[in-house]
Amino acid sequence: MGKIPVIVILGPTAVGKTALSVKLAKKWQGEIISGDSMQVYQGLDIGTAKIKPEEMEGVPHHLLDVTSPDTAFTAADFKRLTEQAIETIWQKGHLPLIVGGTGLYIQSVFYDYEFGQTGKNEAYRQELANFSSEQLWQLLKEKDPKSASEIHANNKQRVIRALEVIHETNKPFSDFQVHNQLKSTYAPCFIALDMDRGQLYERINSRVEQMLAAGLEQEAFHLYELGVHQSQASKGIGYKEWGPYFEGACTKEEVISAIQQNSRHFAKRQLTWFRNRMTVNWLNATDEKLLQQADCLIQAFLKDNLDWRF
Picture 1 (cartoon, rainbow, N blue to C red):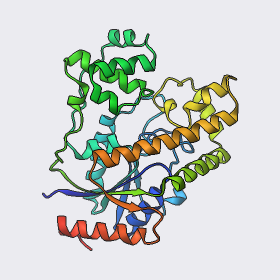
Picture 2 (picture 1 turned 120 degrees about the vertical axis):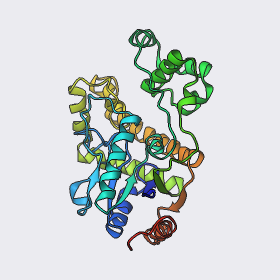
Picture 3 (picture 1 turned 90 degrees about the vertical axis):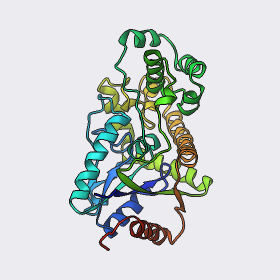
Picture 4 (picture 1 turned 135 degrees about the vertical axis):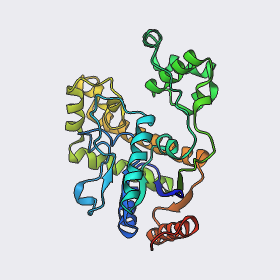
């Protein structure tokens, strides 16, 4: 059996991946796998910009609402479920499309990747819990500068995991990360969307306003009420900013500004990841011929890689 072809639509938040992916999936008998680390959570629809049923236009979607917000979901979980979905889609004679912006998760499916599968050391974790996020990140920087450069200081859970792996293995956490060698199982075609930075930031600000109008505050409060404010889900952009407001420590205007700013910073990090860590075909999301350009890339890719039924 040859390699399974997989189309991957990448790009920063709010760039327009969802709309393009549905059009491509309809054209190529495809099914879509969400490549977003937050859309796996049930009930978190507005803040994650989860596609609505009516927007799917009949295209099957996978890896949406697969776990509760109080459950940790890792890159290893994503890899396992995505590989299962790819097999299921391919066996039906359909084309798998992964669509999202979580670079680490998506990379783990296609590149040789070691997750540092050591068990949890609760005693060591308790020791680390006494430190602030910044102190933990500085400790990681001392032990493994490469990992520190790739993990944001606010991503406390991942910083702790990196330190734990270093503690247990006496090796840098970066030694367990993505290698540049593609796996033999899949043949991926990476298509990344971008646009003028100012225009992208305007779209991000506008999207946040739309989320607020759609009920983002109520969705965030429900998550807060569940008492899972220390969970991975609650630390996502669009949710983590509300805690101080619900506790009376800031204004709603400050929350909105923080969400917009954090979203813009996140988009910048996404673009940096795709440019520095992956080889992709870049397309301008505002080009009126975007669909035609993406379609041509897919057609050429499928002709080059296997005898696809056009």
